[in-house]
Length: 150
Image (cartoon, rainbow, N blue to C red; front, side, top):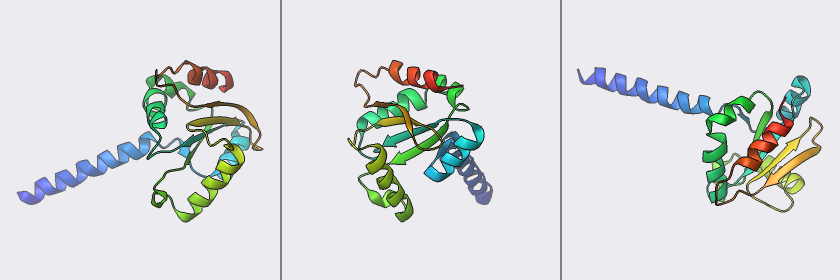
């Protein structure tokens, strides 16, 4: 009888992990891959710089914009690239660290967090928005999404 409960618990935990991975599956982590998809599909790249383990405004932006039901309608309009610059660099692979810090140097010279760049398939910045207000006003972020969505 114990094994049935253990098996059920394992199945449920796997479903929860799958659901979480699926939820965030629209994010890419490789810039070259994002550029290829952008060119092929004719979509701009939504380049998001975050400090996942230290940047409180980044965490609030995640909750208020990316986890917001209104965000769903934009998921097919962009190629989403997540660039994490955590303080605990053990959270990233060595290759990911190299790429992310290279992108930070090229596309976020002010080291502003959070930062969103809208970029074309050649890597040219078309638009951007930096920071996030403690008032949690999402208007500017949704306006940026609307402006560049198809």
